[in-house]
Length: 146
Image (cartoon, rainbow, N blue to C red; front, side):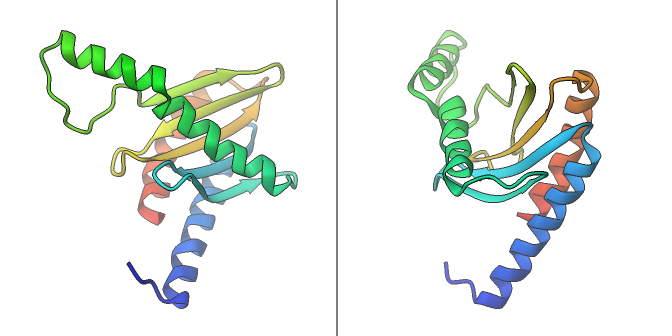
């Protein structure tokens, strides 16, 4: 698909705006990003601090591993088999929450584009319920902008 540079800029700006709004909405959010797992690209990111491009690229790779790694796809196949379902392109894992020493990471699979994931990184002191609730609300705006 060919997209002229002006259209690309408009789409990119729209995604940047949606991510910035989402980052402000989610409690104690220090970073928000949108990953396309089919290409392995971080389509957009907003952070409170600057990070080297290598770190941002690793976010995209880690996200793909979480949702599409060998073990995860094997689990999905077993679930389908045990329920007598055929391969239909849907995935069982829609949301993943990771707690690290100081941060809370939320990964939300897009409802419209199964190969895209919205990522939020929040301070560990954030209220997990509020982070998840506000993250879910933000997904629609980011999907529409991407």
